[in-house]
Amino acid sequence: MIRTLLLVGLLAPLPVLAQDADPSNQLIEGYTACAMGEGLTDKTVSALGLYGWTHEEDNEMGVVNFQPGIGTDTIAYMSLTPGYCHVESTSLGTARAAELLGYLSFSGQVSVDTTETDENGCTTATLSNGVVAVITSGGNDPVCTSDQNSGVRFYFGEG
Image (cartoon, rainbow, N blue to C red; front, top):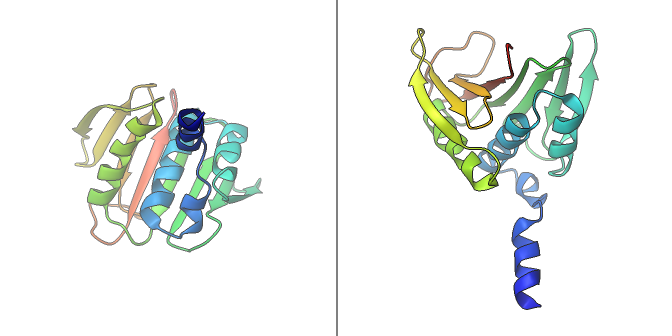
């Protein structure tokens, strides 16, 4: 009985992670939701909702914007049609983003298969489910590396 309760406790979603405002935990939540959401808004909204994230559709821009329940260091957005899902930190750099992306393997459902540098010098990771993640800085004009911020964009299929 105790073992069953322990296993249920370990396997249950942990909505408190986002609530502690830890940008690392928030990035892991965002990465997991994007990587496993298959580019589908309903799956990604549901996954992030488990962690207390809110969302708002912007039909004019063709995106869904996400915000954790607490804190302002992490944001996410995705296209309304399967194409991309983007998770960004205003406080953690690209080296930390790459490290946290490796934590996807703890989900037991997806992991990083290969990592390489693309033609622009940015880190590109191919996940076990075929999703491609590109790590850059955050902001409107991303560069390949930054100590101050990061953005990881997940591409689905031909996205």
